[in-house]
Amino acid sequence: MQNRDALAEKIKNLPKSPGVYQYFDAEGRLLYVGKAKNLANRVKSYWNFNPLRPSGNLSPRITKMILEAANLEYIVVHSEHDALLLENSLIKQLNPKYNILLRDDKTYPYIYIDYTQPYPRIEITRKVIPGKERKYFGPYSVGARDIVDSVYELCKLVQKKSCLKGGRACLFYQIKKCLAPCEFDVPKALYDAELQKAVEYIKDKKSLVEKLEEKMAFYAEELRFEEAAQLRDRIEKIARSSIRSDIDLASSENYDIFVITHDDKKAVLVRVFMREGKIISSAHDVVSVKENFDEQELLAHSILNFYAHKIHPVAAPVLTNIALDEEEMLQEFLMQEVGKKAKIITPKRGVKKQLVDLALLNAKEILRQEKRKKSVSFEEELKELLELEHTPERIECFDNSHMAGKASVGAMVVWENGAFVKEAYRHYHLNARDEYAQMREMLQRRAERFESEPPPDLWLIDGGSTLLKLATDIIQSSGANVDVVAISKEKRESKTHRAKGKAKDILHTHKGELRLKESDKRLMFLQRLRDEAHRFAITFHQKTKLKLDQESELLRLKGISHAKIKRLLDYFGTFEAIKEASFEEISSILNVKDAKIIKKLYG
Image: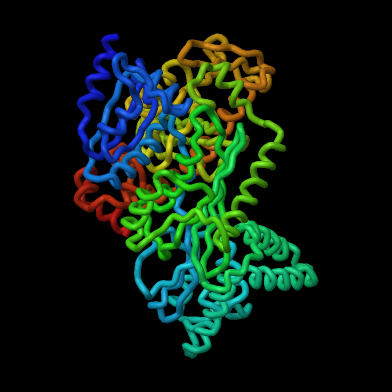
């Protein structure tokens, strides 16, 4: 009752300023992050007073959250725009129980041409630099590299940045893939014609695919099957980069289309990007529908994540399939971020409605395919077995590797939607010498990136109860909501037992140790994650050690002893750091003569 009285008093005395509020349960766990134009009015709308209880007009999801709430904290900001950005940032960093965490926060690449260059090339970038001298195409969800590689396959352009520096025609000229302006006086009009042909291929993927199919058939006839297979794979990826449309805009319109559909288990969010009247790419996310599901929240944060803190070459109107309560706020945000007038439209008729319906048709097809998928994961079973707070749909598993404290590295592998997500894997060069300190260093570095790379539902640590406590402490310090489980090998006579298929691994949870039968599929699933992290760590360790050995051997050949190399590594940590060190720094560790040798070697 005392806590309830304190909470009621805090709510009654909230400021009437823009800000972000956070609800916590009795154990201090974050339940919900929200934003408000007026903190006092917004937060009070959740409650009835005397006695303090949930308001009667709340959704079941928010009512349940309010019943769990025992404390409230808030942050005052200057504007509603700032509150929107802060709310989005905190949700990504902390993964509150009753907010939806949309993990697709990547920056989509663009294809661009820099016309300030004497012989412009086609390149890829994720960073847009404003200016009329650069032409951008995109964004592309997939296939950008394949489009660029295909253009260079078909057009006689400068193939590599380094080509012009050579001063002589190279192999690309001989195989008729370059005009060789590095050696010959190529007329500007001739090169511009090739460049314009490349631009047309980028704009018209249908024409590009047709040309690639012609070349693939030619390679097959010439029995050049490997090259034909490369083109086949490239064609497939380019075709997959966007949904097909027969809608004719008869104009050069630009639109960013965001739609959402869901059933009682899954939600699918589709993004479609239309430029100059053509659909150039599309992407989608599949999200589990839980008690905390809110389609408006998911759609709004998808729009926010795509535009936040990024420069976009085109300020396209946003089309949606559902009207958003926060439409006005999001429009104001878009205007500030993009720098131009921006609109969010939910069309009711006409071509814009056709575009939204097309995106929605694809979203429904993805949802239908999701229903047909055979379940290959054990997320719900794991949640129940391990008594987790979250359903572990995204899992990060950590392991580290070293040899007598040398070449210390860490590895993180990621599992989501029934598969390993290779592009999300991370490896770490570690400075710590013992395994405990190495794991602490790696986990702290991962936690520090929760804002840019949102946290998962579960951390799986290769280790015992000591490392479980370490990881739990780091999560609590970060403020994030992440479950933690550790898995360790059974020990026999103080030695780790590693018999394949017979290993009686021990699971360590916040409730204590858990031992399952060797044949238990849930244990085998966690073992599979642990083994993949171990493989990734060992592979990176071997590469790192080989590089260190090569660097060390090179220094020894130049007259630097093994003992001196060790002193340098103990101080700087890596050979890369030694390369970057100043003459004075190296002299202070060794001597002037050795510093001269090292700086001469590394330039």
